[in-house]
Image (tube, rainbow, N blue to C red; front, side, top):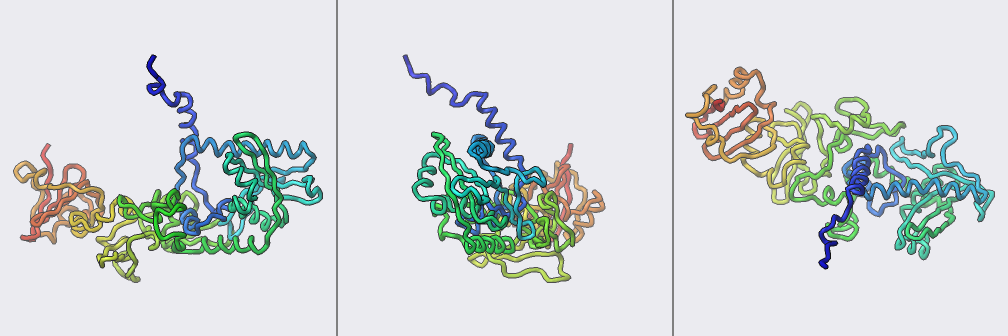
Length: 438
């Protein structure tokens, strides 16, 4: 009998549907609006900065999202067990009936404690911060062998911050081995110097306007290789600026305020930015220069100019502009285009001539809209092209997004919706507006 296992589905439709449910639910969760106490002990400050500036987006499988939920579900069991052995446990804040929240630095630094307890057998008269975690066997073995501070420095840092912000001086760290249900507990003492250093680190990251130094000098370093911020930090060939989303937090105009409520302010438009506003960045978005990894800022716009911009220079001396000035690339364009596209004459020519937004490139618009098979709407000098377009369509040419562009020594052009084409012939200085025939 032949082995049919290789022909059977590796995952049933039921399991696939469950994981798909968790994937959709997890991806739909809003971005964290603060720097979290749970990650402040991360080895790389640059990663923390990217996280705070919303340059990192969660992208886990449904199975992983479900695994995270498993850790959350374990908390209720730990609380029940601690009460059963005589502890008094508060798993929620009596004032709000919600999980204990600690905040600092104007609300931009925050965390949620699993609870607090008194009556712990090792020190029954002392109130303790509670921190619950689950581990696989490998991680659990390291924990029992080396202790929390050495094997799980992020967990240790999280506990130190909670003790500093609550005024408690002890923490009970209770861990479960998910593979065999073994348990481990450790009482952690408050380390004032370490906790204050962590708070200084958080403040430094929140106020920084450029990414801190990397922890390595090569992208394949073991801590960098699997980092969620790897592409944003080191760059990729497919995108000039590989951000997962545009956020006001990546803009030169946005400032975190330290007056409470995790408030951000747009200095350009002089208004507060609600979390929903931050995810809908406006057309004046101007990237923090440090988010461009392959070029250095060498110039910027002064008051009274023709639109804000930052001029960048690459290692070989090639320059290009980002911002609102004519011919400059917007943030959205830099997220869509490859680095090499910034030197593509079809794209740069279309932007210079038509104020076009770079989205795609076509090879020959003249061949697609030949003169004999098109309606000639207008022809004349190139200097009159924009006025002629507005007369014909009651639209500003420099405010439209082309479907495709083309550039050749004798012709440059852009195609717009409705089968409309603007063509410029550099050798003669003439231009045309053509429409495709029905």
